[in-house]
Image 1 (cartoon, rainbow, N blue to C red):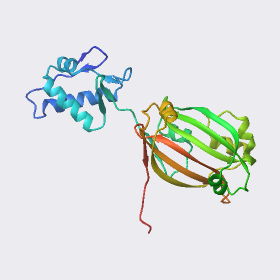
Image 2 (cartoon, one colour):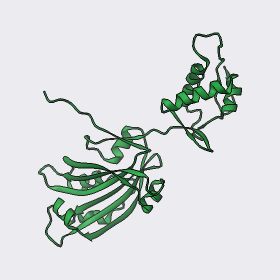
Image 3 (cartoon, rainbow, N blue to C red):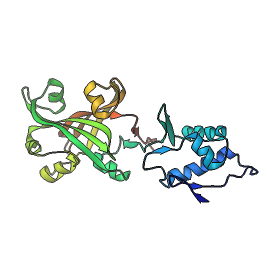
Image 4 (cartoon, helix red, strand yellow):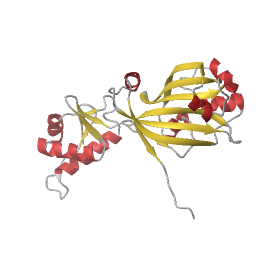
Length: 253
């Protein structure tokens, strides 16, 4: 094997092998992707460059790249080239974890930006969800959350004013869950969720780096403490291009 421009290692293609040439190229490219050869730019070489590197036809390269696309390992961007698909942020909707915990579980770095932290009047819907009296105030906290620097979700949550210490905090890349446990000795035990699709507003599109009107996953939730007291109510919008939701179902015995 010889060192190639860009750090890749050239594997000698065997035209006499029972393994088709395009499959041999696929295996070499998969190995390079796994070894982080293209991590600097995320872009794999052009068809012409790969054809020269592996000493095969561009038709063979095109078939190999199409195979990688079908496997979800790379994606073609018109006018830009072919890029390695980023790892998707996977949210288990049955598992009660903070965003930071989920990032650490996937070896991703959590980050974020606090957008708002203020006292507001609770509308009728939020008031009922939190079991509050008419005219009650709530603490509204909205944040943009990122994983490995990529926007994943916008959180908008409402908390009863008994947790007024939250107004003094700045939540960028730190966990709200951990703060509530440390400061108020409370934690989420159960959570009710409703999942819908929505379209990105202009403000959401700018924060999430998507086009206005792009489809987003919209998750409304109410979280409760051990004694079934509402801890917060709110919603999250997720960018479906970088995030997937999953749930494990089982048959009751």
